[in-house]
Figure 1 (cartoon, rainbow, N blue to C red):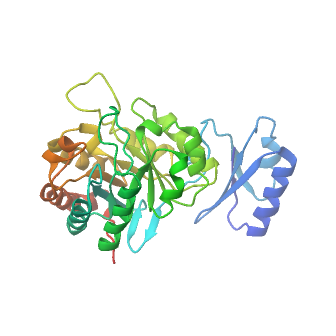
Figure 2 (figure 1 turned 180 degrees about the vertical axis):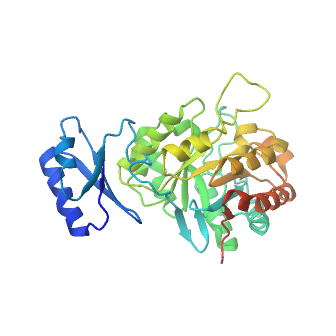
Length: 343
């Protein structure tokens, strides 16, 4: 249930009204303070809540029930866009287009540091790199694990770029204390125990859509994180599995405006995993920007033919530089500017 309060209400009035609602209706009330209004979201069993009685209160402007099962991720609850801001120019959302770039897997110090320097020079605001790698085959390269995380931190020290990397188990959380943005991969989108644990940490979570999951299921997974206390969630469309075999997955470009309409959370697109083909990354990335995406996550490798994972979809640093230049040109046409680290 959503309650919009009249303009001019004081914080004291909001707090007293919230306590009254919680006491009388056995619900939890979350308040969102916007520029022009205050919105209260009632979480819990609201079936027996008397809408007419609430609507009759002097400070209430309107009351309506939220039909969607996701509440905290719902734009009705939080009308303004959420911005994930790491400081010094590193932001995703609110007109800031964040480009996250780097190799699928961290392979060695020389590789990750060189790629980090190259993507930063080209315009990336964040460095991605896999330390823990979920692979379809148990015989494929699984990542350098803790050593990979250490190499990412070293690359961050060299470039200043915040690091984005994937977690696979709640047991690994202690290793991720110094990671800037924790990524939840497509295979773990509905690993609810992991999502609940991530909801207890104070770090942005990049949540990827599952291989065959609906938009509502993605939002419900975000709700798991937010319901546990962490509102800093970034949604990621990375392509879904369809009958088409020409590409690795099928990029659901319509998911971008749909998610932006349904939720206040920033939306990032992964054209690398969506296509699986390096030359398709650029047109899909440009389409994502035009569709309203708040960011892109792109795989870049200094030697794609010899990459230990996903070389076929990785751009070279030169190709990424060309793509970043084109994004920089078109982004203002869609009300965006590149988020670039200032230090």
